[in-house]
Length: 605
Image (tube, rainbow, N blue to C red):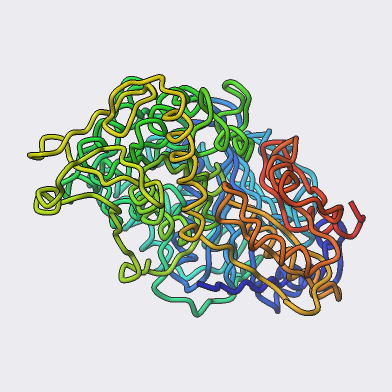
């Protein structure tokens, strides 16, 4: 699956300095050249429904054949503080935030402070009058909240009202824009739908009277079709369902909760069971119980909950129980910043548990990847009878991106050495932990005639009987830990992007760094710097067989990751001693932007 990204930005200078070209491209004073790539930031107070505006804009641009990338910035509280949503729309595929915003909508003074510094030359600001103020040429005010309260009956309808105003200011197709409101609120009460349509119409009327019908910025119409707006959580959940998962247990925790919610929405329709439990200890142990009983099972969590799963993770390794755990990484340690982005659970995922325990750690990079790798995780767990951890991160889990239909025909289900009753009856003796050439023992479902299945956390012999025999201990450790070595041929291979022969600069990254790295590659290429990108999809065991040739092909390799220590780079350096490996790190809770990676390379970091 090779997806191509084209970025219109010619250099990083447009993020900080004005130019005649950028003013014209934004439709500035001349208004002659529509944008091919636009970013709109909407900011207000948490709990006021501000993200609704960003969602409506994304739905509209998606309907116009454009590619979408949507982000959200919220605090871990029910109400108050800054809540901001950004929608990027482009004629070409995009998988990352833009370096600047072309439109800022502010319902709150802090939104102006937060967003104005990144406003592009030629961009404009729409303010909720008397709530926020800003200085500058292209600053426009409307009484959004006041009109919503007086004419619609509730100030919260300022969101749909502002969307109506934007439809004028951006030259949007009025019928299509209104249709988005109808579809978005059509499943709600008739009164709710009517009020939202009224708010939209009021916004159109207000903007037309005050600013005229000539748009401030216009956007080109795209040619993409059949695209859906997905985030990684939803894609992964659907991938697990298609891949045969029929039990899911989880406890709500940001940013993994949407995965649980998607499972609750769809899994029962396929005969599956979803349990929202009291804590993460229960979540993983219920998943282990289901897997022990022969069901493909999984759970999902984030850092604090993942830490609580440590003992059960070791139990899964000792008892050779196949289970999948999704870790949606966020800022730590401890509670950290629950709604912010990080990739700092790498070493935890690889080494967490009492004693040495086998596991595989894989990491999708974009929504289609999340869908495709979910069945792979289930197959790996059952084929090699050990836990598989799928590392995701807040940006991948929650940000919205345009995605084509998922390839259902490519999904394969491999249950490994799970015996049928007929196969079991042909065996003279059945030993649950029988020593075999590949270390994987035949597995049965408890209750099958002639079979037995003890799943003790103690060291045991081939029958499952507890023992402290020294020779047996050595054999069992080699058996379990050997699963990781034997599994290497089945692990997800990397995706390599860029020029194979001419590239001197290399990037290594995993998870959502995929998007910013791809965009940075395009910017550098236009500046005469050819690059290659190793998108790691297997984290553990470290994929030396593919990493070493990649490193040999470049002069310098930047490991791009969101943590303080450079954790993935540390793992790589344990197995590959190569001075050309360098770090580009970010750990402030925000995702990389392409120009940050470009600047690091140009600065020789």
